[in-house]
Image (cartoon, rainbow, N blue to C red):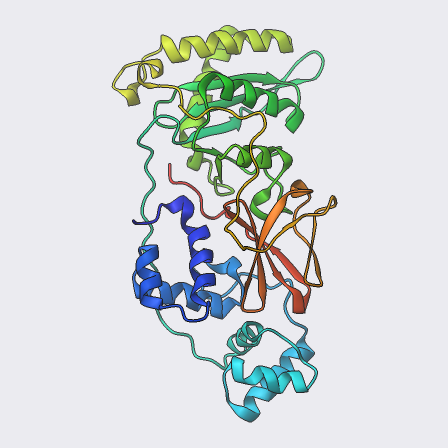
Length: 385
């Protein structure tokens, strides 16, 4: 099966990690993942050249920046070792260990690449299939419509729109943009219409945290536990959420026509009335001049107040994140994610690196030898509108 764009970063990480397993047949692995050998080698090349899984969704052959770059004195030792022996990273590693430089071979490879000691292979980029929503509840778009002043405080209208039918599943007037305010609204929406397969939002609070893998927050973890995939539009590209942005223009026109509500309760009354009108009375041009309610059907997936624990593959190394968001594994102590405090995660070992997986998401890459812990963030893998 061809890969959908929203899955591609996860699949690339999984593919490259599995390609390093002993005895793996590369052609069979490519066939299982539904890609050509050329594409498979392209992704392995990107990993080799960057020395990190974080670069698998980049078009560039090199990382845009290297904040955790190996100290220059270590790089000099690696380069001098190569100049003496002229061998590849795997063969140089034991020689460097004898010199007191204990680095994963992939880090050695990256240093040689950065210092132009290894020629890059030229491969064309693989095409990505456009993602199309074909059914109601396949994707919901969620966003705040700015904020409006009140005599006391402000109102932040929260909109939740079904991508396929433009049905407004949720319109809520909140006085703060916090998890404590948003989560009850989502629960109310889920209990009424069921669960979507995915939700697309921007990089705002409370569903995004730049310091965590996948931008995880307590709210986003709550959504993931319901089996909802989370996508985030590219920063500076509001067209990614074009349908909810277009809805907000309609909402703003209605506010101007009616006049600004003068209290939070008045806002909530207005949004309830507007949602009924928008869904059931207002024909939509993109729907062939029928109303969203005529096209929308609730999701058959029910909301679970107490979702079951995730079952990782049998035999997979699994550990719990500490209350402060850290991982302890085989002597490695590294930060992962505060939002996952107390949660079980899977640890995969690949070429001197640790891949941390929460449920079906790769969220963190750890290089124990260098003391690095890097989030695997998918903000560049936005969903096409």
